Every structure is written in structure tokens, then in C-alpha cells.
Image (tube, rainbow, N blue to C red):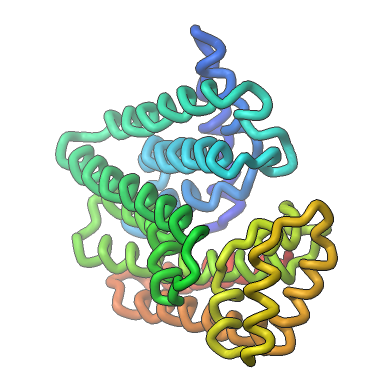
Amino acid sequence: MDILHYQKEFLSYLESKQWIHEPKNLYEPIDYILKLGGKRIRPVLTLMAADIFSSDFKKAMPAALAVEVFHNFTLIHDDIMDAAPLRRGKATVHEKWDTNTGILSGDAMLILAYQYFENYEPIVFQKLAKLFSKTALEVCDGQQLDVDFETRNDVTIPEYINMIRLKTSVLVAAALKMGAIVAESNDENANLIYDFGLNLGLAFQLQDDYLDTFGDPETFGKQVGGDIIENKKTYLYLKALEVASEDDKGKLAYLYRKKLADSADKISDVKRIFELNDIPLLIKQEIENYTEKAFNTLAQMDIKDTDKQNLKNFGLWLMNRSV
């Protein structure tokens, strides 16, 4: 079971699909976003889970594609909401075309994602569609909470963890569970692999928070310090408010009230406050805590030890992004 093998197989399946047909202005943006690259983590998880529970990952390809199309739909709409100019170093859909195109092409992608479940027998189809609807709505919940937090000054760490669970983790968890559903595994295993994905997804997002501020600009793929520029109340910020001195809290609150044309000084000032208060260490402990929770779930699963190790290796690979 090799992550690169799943990635390769999934990419050739993705590329075998003919995305562009009439009206071209609806489908060209879909083709564009789906070919922008990325690690394809979510579809790889669907294939991996199907392989573990049935040794036949190819039958999970349509479900994996549904997950990837849905994920990219959320990116198009998120980028519109954030007025983001770049996605993976290239122009975002609404920049390359326009906002209306981004909205409509995104809508079409959500519907396309559902259509891929039609490849399965009724009982599998029903389970997939039910999980997918629940997950898609949770992702919307998470996105709305993220927007709400921008104007609130009393966000707590548990609220923040709940927001990233909804916005990011549930899709990672659902991707794994879909693989188990396609493989017609028992409900207990399907639920345990979902929990594994949920905790791994939380660790992954917290690591993203860390890398956004302390990552290597050469390898991160996004602008380092983007969250600070946008005044996003990430775990780093919320933890600093919890442990810092009144003086440092005041400085942070002051810095996060401003949006500057040149943010270099702001980024370095915020980073210095984080470092003085051991925030990099504290977030790393939290990342390890959720990674450990994910690994503990594996122990309860009724699968071969080699498969448990493979899932653990995937978690370690994900957590050791050298960026």
C-alpha cells in the first residue's frame, strides 16, 4: 500500500474524465481547478480505506472523485468569500473568469460530486449520499463559523477546535469512511476509521496554522504570515491570549485590529510575541495530542496489523510535511 501509487492511479482516473463540454464557460473553470494540482490527500484516503477493507481500491474511484470534486468546489467558493487572488500559485477561478462564473461552476461541481455515487448499488449509494449530505452541510457550518469569528473578540479555543473540525476534519474523516462503505465493511470499522480521520484532520489543520506563521516560505506554497495579515484568530493567537502577560495581550489585540499595506513588521512583531510565550511549543503539543488520539483509534480496529501500520505511516507522512 503506497501513497504515491494511489495518487498516480487517482490522477490517471481524473485525467481520463472529459470535463469540458457545452456550455464551455461553465465547465472550463471546473477543468481548470481540478488540474491545479495538490496532494489529492482526500481521494487517496478513500482509496486507501477501500483497499484495507476489501483489497480492491479501484471500485472506490468514483467515490474518491466525488470527494475531490466536492473539495475543489469548496475552494472556489471559499476563494470568492476571501477575495483570494491565488490558489496553489495560480489565479483563482473568480480572478481568471469572474465571480458569477465561480459561483455557478462551483454549484455544478457540487451536483457532479453527487452524480459519481450513482455508480454504486442502491444500499451503498444510500450510505454514501447520506454521509456526503451530512458532511457537506457541516463544511458550510464550519465556513460560517469561520466568518463569524472574524468579527468576534471572545472566541474560545474549544469553539475554534469545533470550527476547524467542521470546516476541515469532517471531510478527511468522511473520505476514509466512504472507502469503508464502498468496501462494504462493518459499521464499527467504518465509524472507527471516521474517528481516526477526524483526529488526524484536526492535527493537520493545527499544523497548517503553525506552518502559516512559522513555515518555510520556499516550500509552504502559500504566503507565510497570511493568517496574521488577515487577522485570523487561529489557535496560535487564541493560545497567546490565554497564556501571555497583559502587556503582550494588549500588543496582540492592537496588532490584530490593523490591516497594513506593508505587513512585514506586523508579522515579525506577532511572531516575536508568539515565540516569547512558547506558542510554537504549545501548538506542537496539541498537534501531537490529536495525532496520538488518531493512532489510538487504530488499535481498536478489526484489521491486519500491517494495515494499521500503513494508516499510521500515512498519519506520520501527513504530519511530517517539511514545510
